[in-house]
Length: 175
Image (cartoon, rainbow, N blue to C red; front, side):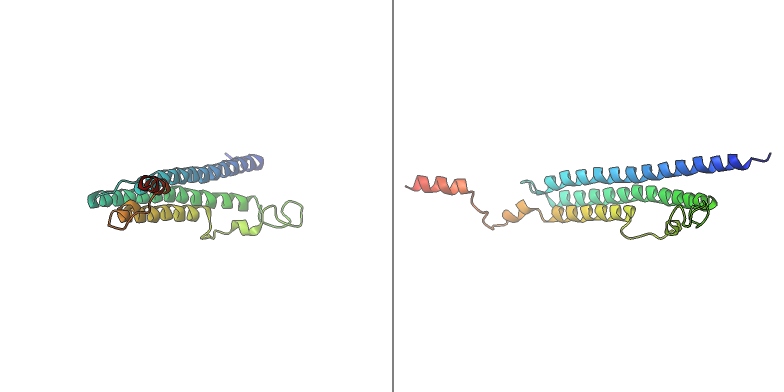
């Protein structure tokens, strides 16, 4: 069974649109997940710097939890990234079949899409690379906060600064 050329073109156009939609969804899903992790990181940061001190066992447990969370987050985002890259290769192949990167293909002097769009170079400032950096920075900051609890530093004998209200109260009672 021979498929007419117009039907082939229709199939390619539908596939291209589906691939574009999938790419947007993958980027959005990865961004939403990392934003959720950032929110969790803020809550965890508050937990770590509140007035409670943590035992060494608690610090070790928190550290292992952070390592587990970071690895699973990176694994999840990396899985989406791999799917995104596979999808991108298909998009480029379809765009090349449709000659969207070639000059004079559609009756104009330039290409419909810039030829550089068909290159498969990854940048360190790309979407997924930025998400990896964000996750790692959150992990590093939370790890530092886990082991350098500010309230623990005050309990080591260093005198905590007096509250201005306490100073005023003390001066009134001395008179």
